[in-house]
Length: 133
Length: 275
Ligand SMILES: Nc1ncnc2c1ncn2[C@@H]1O[C@H](COP(=O)(O)OP(=O)(O)O)[C@@H](O)[C@H]1O
Ligand SMILES: [Mg+2]
Image (cartoon, rainbow over all chains, first blue to last red; front, side, top):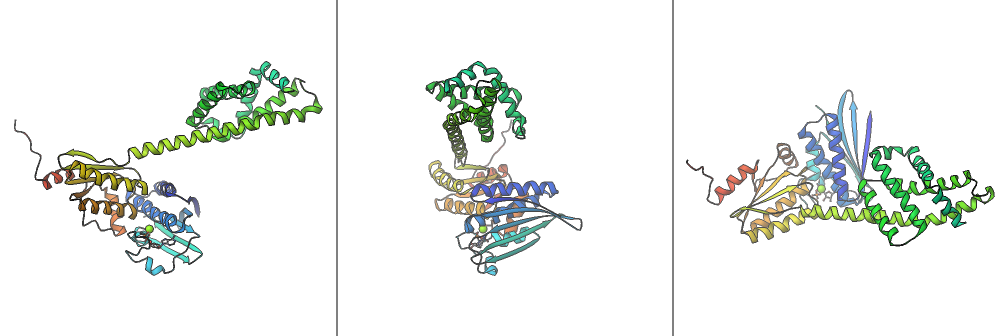
């Protein structure tokens, strides 16, 4: 069972809107304040990457319910330049924009499941899930 | 033909206004109207009706002023533009229906009248929507300015110690202001210790952290020290998860502890007076 809501990311304020959406869903599902902060921070990272590197895209939030286990999945989609070397961007400190390069590895640590699917020239699809304990 | 319509509207004003309001509230869009108090809807829509009539009679200054103040008002009341557009469209239909009902126009010339009414309303629609949009833009840019004003003040709380309380989301523009105000303020207030308070920052992601780290380094270059205060427990956790190293920072959980530490760093302390 999945219920999805999305925010399109075009400018910096859309990042705030995506975070707000994620925080509301996380609250509704019963996540505590620490997990709410983890989820909103992860959304912030992924949405900002879309804004910075792809120019535009979508950030969606799924409410999951699998075998009685509730969870929240963040899906970040764009049709931007894609990521040529996924292993590299998952290293702490790798950045092509002079940033901290801690976003993607950080999101992996903030969430329970994490997956990147990206093809150069086609875009990027990143999914990260947090389960309710 | 034109005069005939205006005369008819003048004569049946109240009746038309009632019918028009009914049309305005009868549709599925009524939801929009439900959310505003009834007396506000009453008075605002009457004003709207007046303006449509005024437009019909004379296009002088009074009309222009009224249109401007009406747009101001609907924007501030949060009248959706869809409702304004609907109001104009329904006006045409109401008048036409009423004309037919009173037999003021012949059946075969009905189309002609409708066309005339439409032609007359089109520039007016454009004008009112244009004014609505301008008023809306003005409101947004004013709010932006207001937001910027409370963006990142550096407050000299005592000799050598300044505080920058950050409240709200940090975007690129604000991060730039933080940096600017910090450096200007540190120099002009001759601060030795600056406390950046992030209690009111909802999300500290790697971009915010990066800006804060850069600001602290810049403050260091002008000869002062930066302290990060107000790190909520959940924010501390996410910072650790992100793998951001704040070891170079002096951090305290509360402003009170921060001020005490800043005093210590500048060779002072708070003592209680014996009495
Ligand atoms: N959606 C994306 N599309 C293309 N490249 C991306 C995307 N997201 C991340 N990247 C690449 O991965 C690198 C690392 O990202 P991240 O870990 O968030 O660090 P940072 O944003 O600080 O550079 C970025 O510098 C960028 O080159
Ligand atoms: Mg990033």
